[in-house]
Image (tube, rainbow, N blue to C red; front, side, top):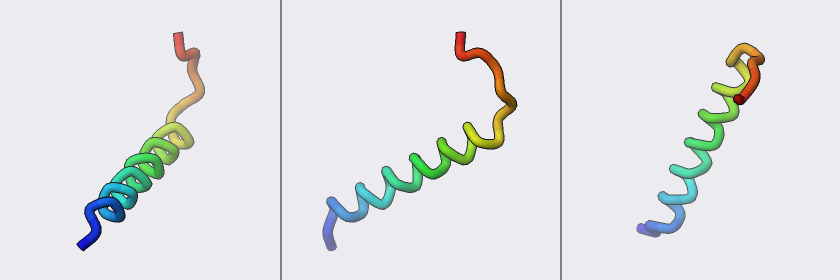
Length: 31
């Protein structure tokens, strides 16, 4: 097993989730 690959897959999953949240979230000022 390659721990590095698992970590990479986990990071990609989190990034994809964040992008989905930002894309579906209503547009509002970050401040």
